[in-house]
Amino acid sequence: MSQPARIKPPMGHDNAWWWEMAADDKLGIQRCSGCQTLRHPPRPMCGDCRSTEWDAVEASGKGTICSYTVLTHPQFPGYEYPLIIILVDLEEGTRLTSQLVGCEPEEADFGLAVEMVIQEDPDGFKLPVFKLAEAS
Amino acid sequence: MPISLKNEAAIAGIGMTEFSKNSGRSELQLAAESIKAACDDAGISPSEIDGLVSYTLDSTDEIEVARAVGANDLTMFSRINYGGGAAVGTIHQAAMAIATGQATTVVCWRAMNGRSGKRMGQGVSGDVTSSDLVHWSWYMPYGMLVPGSWISMIANKYMNEYGVTREDLGRVAISQRNYALNNPRAYGYGKPLTMEEYMDSKMIASPLCLYDFCQETDGGCAILVTSAERARDLKQKPAVIRGVCQASTRGQEQMTSYYREELMSLPEMELAADLVYKQAGLGPDDIDAACLYDAFTSEIIMQLESFGFAKRGEGVDMVRDGALDIDGRLPNNTHGGLISEAYIHGMNNIAEGVRLVRGDSTGQPSKNVEHVLVSSGVGVPTGALILGQG
Image (cartoon, rainbow over all chains, first blue to last red):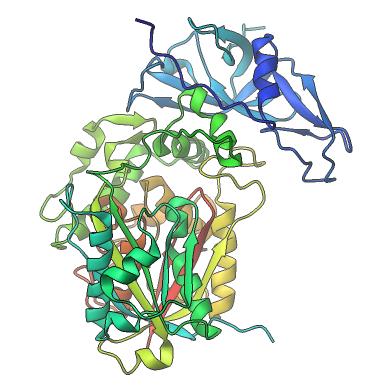
């Protein structure tokens, strides 16, 4: 019996590349080739200059917690509860939704510095999550 | 000249099935029964219906409904997307159709076995890599699979910024439960909720606990819209549509508009407020009561600010002052709302808005209710409706 696994993202033209970067241990941010604007979540066209040309940059993985929630119910197979979900303001200026790992729910708070780590599930799926940054 | 929708159409009938946790019949039957009830309420035959509007999430086709109730030829049929964000959007479609002569008798309905059948928020999945599925893919792998998980992110940010406490959310839940105590249709009929019970209830997605969530309900609700002129000759006192709009704005996502500069407001609801007040020629001071969409308690407090009843960050003061209660400044969800009456995706909040204008709600305030504001879903593309007397 295999362990229940988290729901996998569908891989389409507009998002598969981001997960492929994650599989390569990288946190990607889409960058418009027309006006250099960084955007997340990714989209096929730039809402500022309407260019459909883009590439991706690798984020430093450093950011701060913009908001968070601790999920306790309902509990779905493939996830560990309590589950701390965070919005991270990346230092590059975009924001993404992710998970905070390696700490207790009580430790989560607004404005805390976090850094990305790649989590690998037993089935080999990789996703970028965050842990509290070491105190500098 | 563009056609204004102000005072063109009116709600002449409302109809509901009972609300339960297990209806024991099909969603088509719930739709047909509630539509028949709306026609009976208005005093017209279903054979006059020539327009039908529902939600994209509704499982029942218009033509099935039309055959079941024996409707007239249909000259207008339409669907609105985004879950509860569709609620007053259905009335918007009906009002536009009537004002432009595309139909004369439009019924908007929502019928669902929302507890015994397909429950809302049971995770999102699909086989086709649509833009919608890709949107959810940013949340599903992380375990954000249900509405509570999406809305709690905004609620926590807002509450932290403005000093809103769990007790404040409890006050909203209890205010609405108090209305439901007197409403025989309501889940909360005769079931009081105390602050102690609220505070002790199960945490679901912090800071939201069990009682911050709406019901899951089996039931149907239908709203019959016709011209204001004709409505005056029908059985009920008409609830005239002073203004109705849909609103979606920059950075809009479905439940996860997390990438805007700041997260402590509801820009789409502010747009809805601006549009509906302008159309109606009214402002917040003219609104006597409200049915603000309430999938979650936190949404009520934020909407008080979106619609200009309170300044930014001060919505909570209204809650603490009892403004939402029956003798308050803005009696709200006087049937119990989605939280304590039933979750019919906001259609039942529109029905209550009609009752307030007619003056026959079980939670009717003693003051004259000239204008009622009703809103669609929060955190999604939405809309607003103002109903007025005669």
